[in-house]
Length: 263
Image (cartoon, one colour):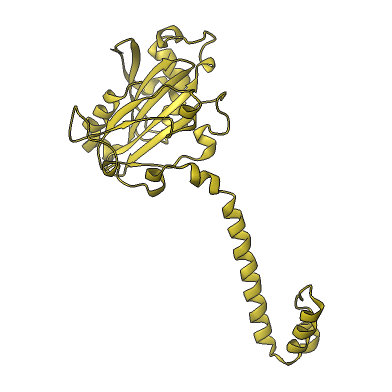
C-alpha cells in the first residue's frame, strides 16, 4: 500500500533526478515524504503570491515617500506663515497624476503637523484616465484619527456644464453645484435636507462656494465641510469630514483647514 501511494508523488522533469527521487521514495517513510511534498507546495504558493505582489509595484513607485511611510506631515512640510501651529501643503506636479498632466491648477491648504498623508488607489487617483477623465477623482487625502480627515476631489468641468473654462458662477448656484457633487462629499448619497449652510467667498479673481453639512448616513462622517471652485477645465472640491466624537473637539481646526484652501 505504501509503495502504491508513493508513486503518486510529483516528480521533476529531469530523468536523472526522477530516478534518484524514485529510489529515495522507496526507502523514506511515508510521513516524511508527505511532509516534503507539503513543503514543496508551500514554496510554490509563496512564489505565486510573490509574483502577484510584483504586479502592484508600479502603484508603490508612484507613491511619494511621505505617503509610503504615512508619517506626520510636520516632519517634512514647512510651517504656515499665517499660523505657526499649522503646516502648509502646496500641491505640485510631483504629487498627483492630474497635476502632472496639467489637468488641475495647483492648490494649497494648511493642516496640523500631526496629520498623515494617505495612499490613494490607482483607480481613485485618475491615473488611468488622465488627461481626459470622465468622472471625478481623488487628488490627495490626509487624516488624523483624533481630528478627522480631508480630501481634494477634482471633477471634469464638462460633467457639470458644456461651457469651456466656465467660472463656478456660470455653472450655477451653490445649491445646484452641491446637488451634483454631494455624493463625492459624503461618499455615498446626498440629501438636500443635509445641507445646513452655504456661503460664497471671493479670493482675488477666484470665487468659492462653501458648505456645511450634517450627514448622519455618510461614509465620510456625520459632519462634512466643503469648499469648491472652478478653474480651467476642472472643478476642485475640498472636503473636511469628522465623526461625532472628532467633531466635538476639532470643529474649529477643520474650519481653519477649509478656510485656508485655495486654487
